[in-house]
Length: 475
Image (cartoon, helix red, strand yellow):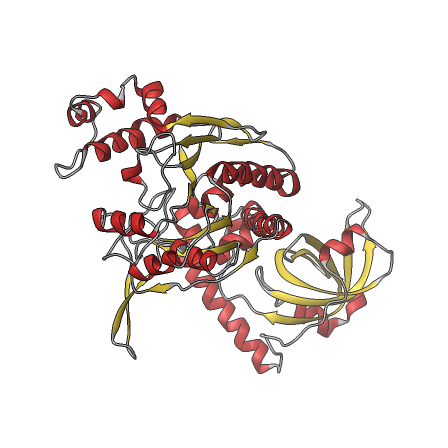
């Protein structure tokens, strides 16, 4: 804090001590509100007696009267106290109110000569005395680093921030409603796993003392959800927290929310249709429109969305024919890309896709039919066993969703686990293979990155804008 802010804190602590010495409780107890501030404004009744509560966000003393504004989770409401009406003792106590204090007010509604709904204070209580000042002149926090570290102040200061998180809640609620209406069952699966499977990522490691066992925070719930298909739960979904021990960026947070959906007797085509319909539902019922401005572009969500074959997408956006590249490593290096000497031919081609194709996929686009080597959990195409029935959804250059026709052949699954152990974490999940040996119906599986989805639909430019408390480097 600056010297000026330190001085404010010192003065407020002195004021706090004065309140306590007078027998005033500065951190109050239960306060039963009769109305929200929004209801007071929208359903105004002259003279209506109300009990309201919120944070003081404006305070203007004028001799024997005080005007100000109280803010709750939805809106602001003007308050007014006059010494002649409230009495000297109550008025003098109210002069000890500071910006940021949380108050409970009792009074009656009226409108000022400018038509603003106002509560005439007849009594009040302190519910929380603020010792630190709000951002200067109520212009809001501007420093991005402070906004993320002190999200509690950011939420107080910035109405747009509160709006984003309200919309996030609405989007998640609508996702559940959409899937529930289609007969899906919401489930929960373990967040600590003995083998980190279901995705290619570096896990966080923890230790279970009672079992003396290292466990991994899950990188994906996929293998557990497919076990439930074996058990006869034909349509399941989980809104889950995943943890990946990887980098930080405007698109990555090590702890993030995923939606995973599995539907027996379906395939990746059904998952494409489900994804389109879900986004349309969210646009129509939460956002209120199907065209959204993001990153300088107008994104259009009316289906059907573009579908691009994986290799054709590479050729379209780079001019290279990936199937006939003689030396993909040299081509990648000419593009300024890093190439690890241990990478296979397809891993190099996939790096070209990730770095030079993905960024060009602005409108919602399904990239389909990936090489099977990149998809250890997907079923192969009947017409071409070298390709997998897989799609990834890209919007404005971001991967937002991933889906398969799920591999349900236990012999083939065990083989792929063995061949690609370096891609699926520590060892092979042989209990999952055992589950498949009992018979898992053919199924479509879908994963959607909820944080990225919320970013796009709310117009937020960073994943940190849609996560209450993003991971940051130490101060």
